[in-house]
Amino acid sequence: MEFRQATEADIKFAADHALFPKRDPDQENNADFVYTLDHGDYILAVGGFRMITETTAWAWIELTEYVGNHLIPTIRVISEYMEIFCKNHKIRRLQAWVDEDFSEGMRTAIHLGFESEYILKDFLGKDKNAIMFVKYYEA
Image (tube, rainbow, N blue to C red; front, side, top):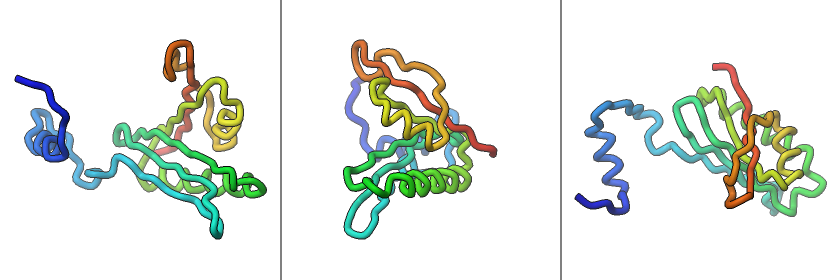
């Protein structure tokens, strides 16, 4: 026996021959969803979702320096799209982490409707904690 880096073929083989199959063909190859929000010639934000289970996903965004005077509409658009995405993908729990020293990131998470859930101790390295934020949706 030996361990090696898995290939896409290995993952497909394991799904096809699973001891306890849970395969959902509609969800195959849809673990990551990445989007860009632009305004004219400028990218305001890039973000996305990573499915964890059928009803839980990570969310992330990276705002650019061009968000400037567009911050409020950018947050509004992202918030509205999160609602649509979560409804369409039947997500009940959406979660995101923020470095505990990044107050702007925490304010952004709160403006997007997330609530602080708990501290992720040493999540970003020794003595570098993060805060888990979560937002719940109806099924």
